[in-house]
Every structure is written in C-alpha cells, then in structure tokens.
Amino acid sequence: MNTADTPLIADELDVLARLVPLPGAQLIELGCGAARLARSLVGRFAGAHVMGLETDMRQHVKNLAEPQAGLVFLAGGAEHIPLPDGRFDGALMLKSLHHVPVDHMAQALAEVARVLRPGGWLYVSEPVYDGALNDIVKLYNDEGVVRAAAQAALDAAIAVGTWREEACERFDMPAHFASIEAFEQRMLFPTFVDHAIDDAKRAEVQAALRPHLGADGLVFTRPMWVRLLRRNA
Image 1 (cartoon, helix red, strand yellow):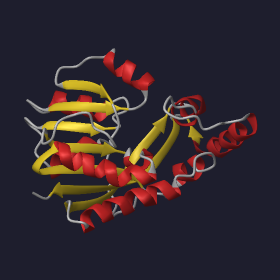
Image 2 (cartoon, rainbow, N blue to C red):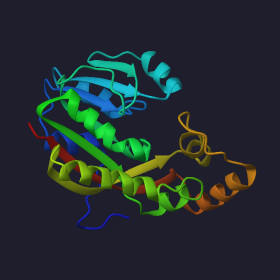
Image 3 (cartoon, rainbow, N blue to C red):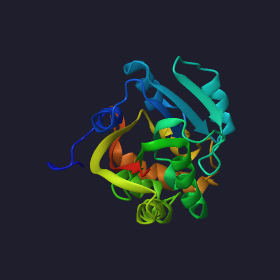
C-alpha cells in the first residue's frame, strides 16, 4: 500500500514526460516486451520515434504483427545492440535491466551509452524488492539477487564516469489482474522464460493469491524505483 510520501502513479509515461523532453525524440527501448508505454508515447508526443528491441522471439513476432507509426521493432538485446553509435536521444529500460544476465549488465550499460548521442539520457525503471505482489512472485521466481545487481551495475557505471545521475524517484504503480488465470498467463507462464512450474508450485501460488481476489480481480500496488542517468560527453 502506498503512503502519503509515495505517490501512486497509474501511467509511468507521466513520470518520464516530466523528467525528459519527448516531442521529436529519437528513442530506443531495451527489452520492450509488448511495448505498451512506447505505443502510448509515440501516439502522445508529436515526432517521437521509438526503436523497440526484444530478445523474446515470440513477443517480437507479435510486435511486428501490430505495426504503428513512429515505432520500429528489432530483435536483439542490450548486451549487443545491432545499431550504429550516437543514434538516439534517449533510452528506456522498463523493468528489463534485472533480466540482463548479471555478468553482462556492465556491457549492456556500455552499449546503451554507445548508441546515445553525447548528453543522451537513460531512464531505468525497476521494481523494488518489496510488497505483497513481490512476496507472491518470489514463491516461484525470487529476483532479490538480480534486482540488487541491476542497481549495483548502475552505481558502477556512474562511478567509472560513463554516466551521471540526474534524478532518482520512488513511486507505486497499480498492478491489476482480472483473475487468477490472468495472473498465471502473465506472470507464471510468460513467453520469455520457463519458471518450471509444477502442480504443487502452481497450487501454492494460487493459495497465496486467493486472499487478494475481489470483485475487480487481483489488485496490487507495485513499488517502483526510477533512476535517470545522463551520458557524459
């Protein structure tokens, strides 16, 4: 539950738009998934373009099947961005840095810096390892180590002088699932990873979800941590 000093943000694009100029921006999103924020961004800000990279080929095919003006999709990951130097004004990593293998995180951040213009920015949004939703997810996918590693990688990249930090914000985001089955589809059985869920683990997760199930489905708040980094020239 959010507190008085932790705002509840329904649309993260509002946070991004407050921190950086988006009209006309040339952007890249690493690990774009279904590109929900990117699709909203190019529709809302005139002249903005987003290149969305995704390593999950099933999701990539789905993205290609839903073309949208201002949005281009490319198969690839942050560790090896198949694009030339200095192409973008800004980069987005939305709940994706912790999915990069820990020993490749430094390389990924260096690659992001490479494809940005001097003074370009990197917006990193990561879930905080806390809250009721996190308690359920860690029953089958404990991300405590990788989420801490993601923050440590950002700190290390700042320490070596590649980046400087311009903003750091915490907020809560609503997370809604229409049913337990909808939760399972998105969280237990995503296309990009096999959590090796057996019947016993599935039953354990379902039991943990039931107390949160109401007339509107499953409703959680997810604590988030945003860090805005600026590439040093």
